[in-house]
Length: 259
Length: 264
Image (tube, rainbow over all chains, first blue to last red; front, side):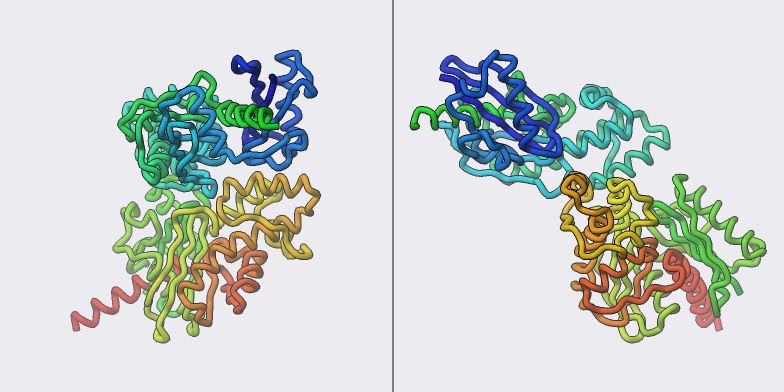
C-alpha cells in the first residue's frame, strides 16, 4: 500500500512516499509564493523518482505552514504531531525533539509511542530560525552550507549582543568592517542561535534521547553548540528535512488502514 | 558662549551648536565609521559650517549609544535626558517625547516643569523602529524617502504583521502577489510600525503635548499612522533628527552654569 506526506514549510516544501517496507522516495523543493503550486511540484518530484502516479497513492496527509492549501490531501495534521511521529520512526527512544525550520523553531516532548506531549514554539521572531542564518550567510558572502563548518574554525566566538536579526546583522556588519575574521563572526552568530533555541528547549524539560530535525540540523555549527548547551549528544537522521513529511506519511498510512 | 552636542546613533551621527539662546547650526551624517572618528568628522563639519574655531566652543557634550567612545567630549548624558531637554526647548508645552531612530524607539514622559519622569524603550526588536520601514521599502522596491508619501496616497491599508521585520518580507511578497497596491502595502507597513510605537506611548499615558523626534519623524506616513492610532495630535519640529544633539548642547550649557553658581 502506497501513501504520502507533504510538508509545506515557509522555506522548503517536502514530499515523501511510503509503502509497507519503508520510504520509497522523497523530494525537497523551495516553497514558492503559492502553497498549492509548491505542494504539487514537491509531490510531482517524489512521484517521478518512484515512477508512480498520484492515483497510485491511497492516502495523502499534508502538514506544515501551508498545509491547508493542499487540495489533493485527504487530511491535514499539525507539524508538531508529524514531527513527533516522524522522529519516532527513526529514533523510538527520542523524548525531546528540536525542530529548526526556515521561519520557526519548535521544542517538542514526545512519549514512548511517538505522541507529542508538550511543545514550545517560536514563530514570531526570526532569531533562532533558518532565516537568521540565511541573512547572515548573505551578509558575509559565504554559501549557506559552508557557514556551519566555517563557524567551527572560529578562534573565538565574537559576542553578538542583539537578539533581533535586523540589529544582529548590523552588529555583524560592524565587526566585518573592523576586520574581524568571518569565522569568528559566524562563531558568535551560531552561538547566538544556539542560545536562542536552548531557551526554547528549557521550556519543555529536556530528556534523552535528544533529536534535532529540520533544515538547520544539517548545520554542524549550530548542532555542536546546541549539544554543548544541552549536554546531550543529538541524534540526527540522514535527511533531517523530511521528518515532517515522513510523519505525515505515517499518519496517511493509519488513515488508509482505517478507511 | 557656544556649546556643542553630539549624538552618536546606530546609523548616523548628529551634531548641534547652541549659543544659550538658539540653535546656531546642526549637521547629520549617515556613517559606517567607528563612533569616535565619525563624531570627529561630524563635529569638524559643524564648526566649518558655522565658521568658528574649536576654541570658540565652551563645552562639547556627547549622547547616543556611542557616546562613551567620543574621546573629545567634556561629558555625556543619556539620550532620554538629552531628548527631553531638546524637545522641551523646541516645544515648552511638551509632556511626552517620542524618539524614533533607526534601531530603537523610546518614549519619555516629562513633568509639567519639563524634567524627565519616566521612559519606555524598545531597543531589542526592529519592529517599531526606522529599520522596519527601511526593510519594508527594500521589500517593496521603493526608495525609503518615498515610503511616507506613497502611504499617504493609499486608500486604506493592507494588513501587515507587526511582529518581526524579517518575517514581514514574506507577508509583503504575498500581498504583492495577491494584487495589493504598493501604496496600500506601504500604509500597512507604517501602521505595523506605529502599532509597536503606540504601545510604548500608551505605557507613558498619552499625555499631551506629544512631540515626535528622531529620523523617522521626517516620514509623514509614520506621523499620520501614529496620530490615527494614538488618537491624539503629534507635533513634529522642523529638524527632528538633531533634537537629541541639541539637547546634549543645552545639557552642556546647564552643566557650566551650575558649576558657575557653585563657584560664586
